[in-house]
Length: 190
Image (cartoon, rainbow, N blue to C red; front, side, top):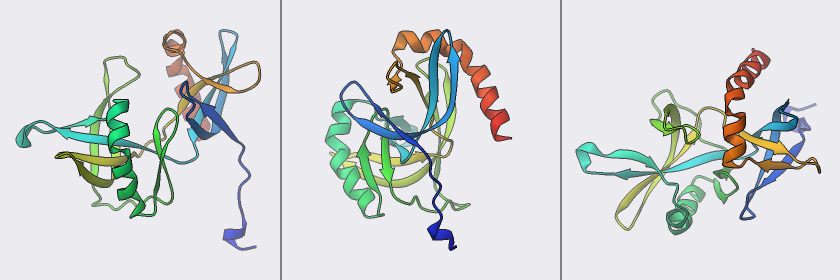
């Protein structure tokens, strides 16, 4: 049997956000906490972030674009730029994703280390991002980057066995358990 003929049969599940956007994911881990079932999901396509370079030239800083109106405005441009690399940008639930093969990681490749606010906690967590493309819109420079670390989505499983995004209140309730879950995941991958 040739390598190309072998395909691992992995179950995917679709998560839908409150505005109807969907994202296909695989279930990486499931657990029960406080009488509810939860899953950690890994997107099937590659998550990406659009970063805006804001400020004066010497003091420019990378700022993730999170404003929905700004994303709506620049999405067609980002999509066209990524299509030049045979990547399809998608407006999915939770995060933007790209379908296709990401460029090989080169040792001298362009990376960005960004301090991204973790879970609205006010604390910055360092994140390494791989550069994919850049573009301008109305004299504003943007870059599209893919996180190097896995992008996991925490969801609650409802009575119909469907994943549901957590509300802010649910996230705060389960947040103290996250370090223990992280330890379990690390043990699983060792």
